[in-house]
Length: 305
Image 1 (cartoon, rainbow, N blue to C red):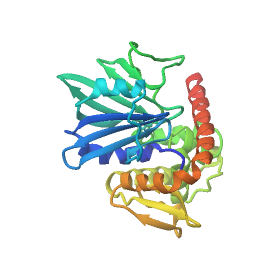
Image 2 (image 1 turned 45 degrees about the vertical axis):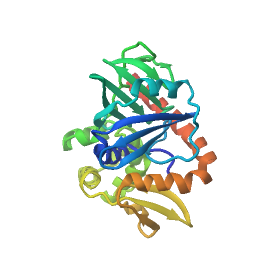
Image 3 (image 1 turned 90 degrees about the vertical axis):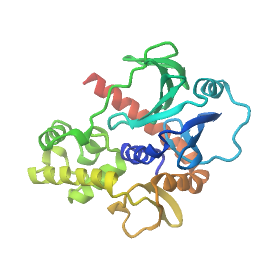
């Protein structure tokens, strides 16, 4: 069951958010680790950008928003009121979205970190002006008045040529699905999809892969990227009447299951949050907690390497 965004999910979302460019930030709301930004978009009117720390970031309307903003929401209102959206991008292949804003002639970066504990950072001239969760790591300090530095970038599998992809696989250890999910940053769902499309048993040890199997995995990965970029067919997938996933493309692993099509991935994900989250909040929070812990441990391991 889906409990957070993947890098491919964020890639599809960022592509759809390009229609927000030219719009401006209207108001900010906050409830615990959930933050909502209301945006006046030129093409769509008012929309709401919903963020839940470390898990979700999409256009999604939330009912019963708190009218009395906590301190962080107050700060967002002060810093971002009427700020115009100049650009939106994903940082590499990481689960980080950057909104480039401009207010009164001053550039502002609004950064959403959708991994681990999660975070929102407002940076002016690369210096942090506001942060949802002040944190200090070995390689960076996410604190007000400190320079904002992105976390150490994970491997971008879409930037690898065939040789570099093969090398990344063969220098890792363990089952191919786990290597694809962690070392190549695909996450569990898309790692399984790559194995399925390449007709490679997911539990195969990477050291046992043949050259032909590596080529098949490389081709499957790039076909997935093309589909996400150019052939999106967003769906919410159901099993036994319950929503289990929302994806920007059709996945072979869900073939035969009930599904509902949507014109945009944002709409599919918003629907998923509406129908799945009330039933799975407790399970999702527990799963997300362990997933965040795993991600943090993997990041520490990569830094040590």
